[in-house]
Image (cartoon, rainbow, N blue to C red; front, side):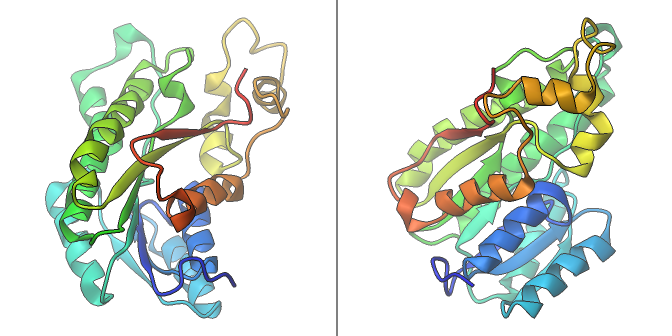
Length: 256
């Protein structure tokens, strides 16, 4: 059990599974108490809470859809069960693939309401409650800066996050609050297992397996594990990153 975050409290959205779960567990291992946000799977969220409390830290699970402004307000209201909030990690997000001609206004709203507006709402509420020294970490994606077949809507929603942290760093810096984003590459999660084949260009889809293709696009020759993404977040929210703000940190294994 680490102590770099001893006495601090973190809120992690989308923390019931995948990268969000790994972040929550890592911050707890570093000494933080953790608020676990989830949208639709209370059992998984409670399992994360139990793992954290079994390790000697405090944790609670709170349901909220981050695309809903009122639910975001209520999330932060309920998080006041802890005396303080020092770290907010916005991880909740949804995928989208589809050709340009098939994208609907409803698709746009659904993706941007969660991936972009939801993260802005989280940052807004976080900025209102964090004290000097507080840290916000949003989630972008390497898809924001590379070309991926039929991934326009998702990539655009994440590119907006890159701009968001750049601009908000100037504003929040006046309050002593840092804000950054992580941009994971291919990561070994259930989401990646479900949609990994969609990242493959039609020219190679019949020549390589999903794992072979994903491995071939990184310098290290493999996917990331969620714990490796969480390690980067652990750095960003710590005092070791005290001069690091307004940046998007790419965790992509050397994307090629």
